Length: 461
Image (tube, rainbow, N blue to C red; front, side, top):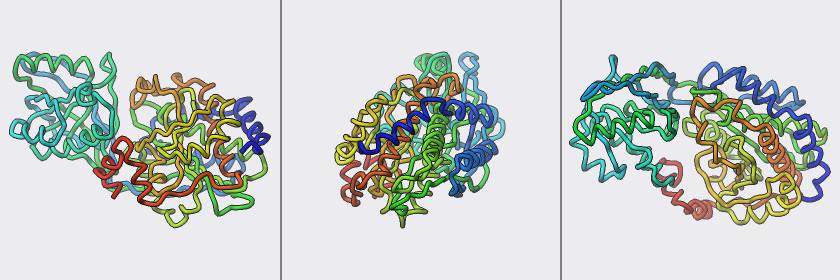
């Protein structure tokens, strides 16, 4: 790894001195704004990204289609408590959740404290025709795969019990709303559901302590049928082992509340900047480097899942999958998905090339909720950029996810780290680490019960 130091210095200098990370992010967010998968803004952003790769001198640039089972578009949303007192509420539908019936829903509300299957079953007789309220601070008292799995499957159980809709209290003060799709696959959820402001939710819970509460709720979302969207893929062909490859990716799509600057415009800008700086070297690495901008991430990693399965026959030649999707906080290093062998292999690179950039940490943390996971499930060494996320929740999936929240220096540092890492792995004499077989991947997933979480989603057997 240390032998790549001169190239790493050139790449780093190109990005940190007169680089384009912030300009690229501003062009993406200001020009195309929110990039909901299937929207015209997403389509135009994909074409823009492909044009950028070509402008860097990369010849192999193409759009790879993937299918989504349903399209979705947000419509007006409103809610108010009408008894025992009148009170307007701040609400927003979750993405890929259906509209309420024409004219909305008028129903009593019931507060559910426990998402365990037995707990919902015990309440089933009290759910029919009701609007369910969930206190996020209660049901998410611990963030874990087990809790997330219960949250995802609870919507089906509420629908089976005949509930009319579900509202979940938002997690930030001042009635700041978050959106998203708590489910997977881009399918339409079984009943209407969304977010209600933190303070409004607290008001509802206080009234529920005193007696029955009746709400009117109206979500006017629009649902359409199957459609195709595109991943954007570019490749710099390797000079000595072109059939071996490293892939560096980020997701291009965003939610529709804001311009997705942190989630995940920052990652898009870093991948594009890495491609620009590596192409500018003029000399390709030993192995090929692919740059991928995924679609459908917010609906369950649909674009990256489709890519992995479409390219399954060549995954044995994929030496590593790198991903950046944790915002533009200060970069700290890499998460290596509970693989000590990858952590050990990364040690020289981290020490000699990444530590001077402030990115020398190697964490064995594992995360299944972004686009590297399907590579990891196939045994490919997978790395996810580790950044300071202490402020991330203030913007993530909210109207506040805008350019002004991004620190240009941290964004550029992240671009330098992902570029140098991709280059060093692609230019090394030996592959980064071995591929795991199915049994070894299963052992890797046992951390944090991730194997059970993915089995519940039908993504692991």
